[in-house]
Length: 115
Length: 418
Image (cartoon, rainbow over all chains, first blue to last red; front, side):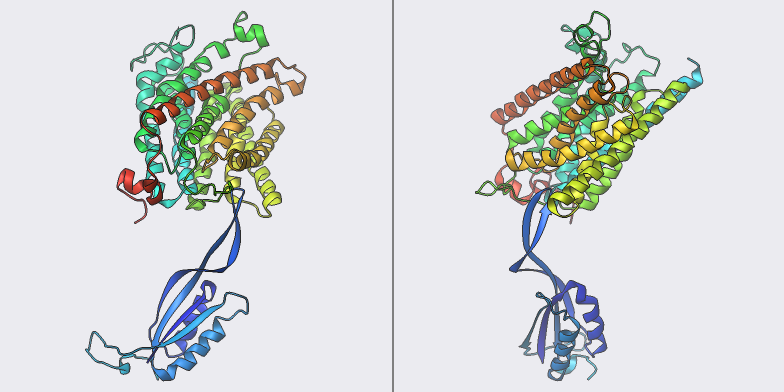
């Protein structure tokens, strides 16, 4: 069982969401995140030039069984890609255990992804 | 005059008063949008306070100070103590009082934006009361109250000196420039917001939290101005009046559109992109500028007035911010102060009946120049005494922790967004 975290462009969220639902992922979380990086965006407000280093992205958190890690990562790599700087990152880490609160069931069978 | 004509005039005046009242939410939304979300409750409160104080104080005292019989050598009218019976005119006095009240409150509410995000609420109340009680009614007495600046008797000071009286149809000088000058002095007395200027002295952007709100505010103000200017005719019946208010409607709208377009294109040239927040100011600049001469200038003159005001506005905002380091978050001192003065002077040039550019000599321009000087020196002197007096006696500015966390929490215990 693994946890996949992906930071993607806001504009790619709808496409990635569709692709994930079509590729056997039963549930995932997402949140809007603000990141700070080396790149800057030039802006002007009322005649004052300033650069904002705040970059808005969407972070997805997906927990899935081992056999789904590869296909899921591939889906995100394909769908969230534009080729420009700032497409984002994917992180994969181990997940130790899980329980279903409704049934009390334990282990990765709790994850109701289809495979 | 026939009763139907008088009724029509009264209804038009009250309808215009409603439109001018509607400028209060316009100002409130505009100022709230141009400032940060942690200070929204505070700035909305200030806008309500201006109108609440203005309504009561102008009824009890200000109306008499402005329209009462000359006293102290014409400096001020006799106070009325809430008794309206002294006023003699064709229009019902209570309706006329309401009409004049909304103008007084407009002048008062201009200042809150320039002093936004760092003023003690309690001390803002003092300012708000003083402008509605004294500053506005006194200069109003010199002009619309029938005082010396507008005295057209042959042997009066203005007629013997300039051959013309001071003319400010709806208040470029009397309402807007007074608010704008007070706004500037208030912003100077307060000092800039924390973080507005870097250690190197460079101006930093503090973007407003909601330009949608500010844009709605400006549309509302634009609508309100159709009461502000055409309503100042104070009559609608008869051939002369129905043509006059239509003319004022047109000049008002043309100047607003030209002002906004001028600002849009200049920011486009200067910054590479057309700026919404500046264009909103540009529309108001055109409106403020045309207010003095909207009855006297031609439609072309109105477009010229708007273009000049919308152009000067951009440079004025930059100069006040970048060179003078005066922090005016909403640009009130440029929009209302600079363009109020500009509009008054342009009336002296572009008036088709007595302006210098139409071959009528410089007498009327001299009257406009003298009038705006007297009015704004009065406003500046009062503002200086008031704001620096408060600063010395009690402190005008909140503590830095309040400013950092937002005035909403510390000053009001409520926030607008939860």
